[in-house]
Length: 362
Image (cartoon, rainbow, N blue to C red; front, side, top):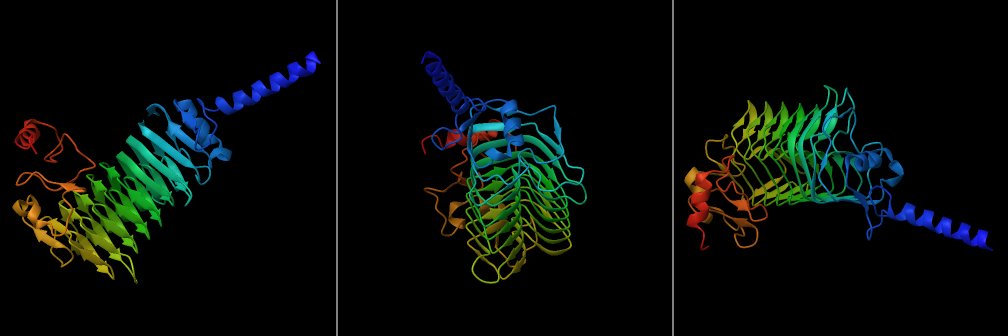
């Protein structure tokens, strides 16, 4: 009897250990997600495709410096689970593909996935001349993403973005990218290609460069909806190039840009615009661009620098819950991102302090 009891106890202990101490803890359920607390945990997840449908949470910042990947870190299969960054970040990873596709922290995510509250910093994702679907967070995204950001550089051929290479029928909210995206076609500082997706309360501050369908926020917006977003980085392309969106396309409902703006300098040779390079069936509503930053092709309304710093210029915008502005001092900024760089000149200095002081009682 004692031997049987001992065997039962040992079995139960082993079960408890497997449930409670996978990775750095947790059991992979929504109530007790697997805990990612170190680089070893992240690499364990990367190698364990059977867990790609589970729930994960970061419990610390993870530095991946010193290791060069040739594929997406979490990329052996579609990720279908939940990854909660828990306001932590994954930093300093390098992917040098050698011709592989679907590159980023995640190679591809499915419609059932959720990635949230995650920062991706100082990454370098480099695709070869044949690499498609390249982004800092994910090469291909089919699931919802919220409260995420990226600061790094992504390069490839088609579908290249600072945050996402390709967004398919998914919602992207409260996200931003300050890194750079470089490719051939469908290149955006935030998202390379947005197909049927909803992108809202997002911004980009990096540069986007390519040949065709290049945008400061999105390269090609196809049947997608963009609202309450902005971009401030330079955009360099040849054709279908815009400060916010390179090409805005729709064959019906969708392809709608509302309450958004861009200020970055736009250069190109054909179908180039300060806000949108070319409109192919979509629509632009209450959206603006900085006069002189790019050509006025009729898509979006140009505003002078002074007008861009006046709340009254932005017709129908919500300056109570969504937007804020330093009247006569700053361009509109999303209340979600209260930054120390108040005047958005790329640095925090005395000028930011002066603006803060002048609005202290606001």
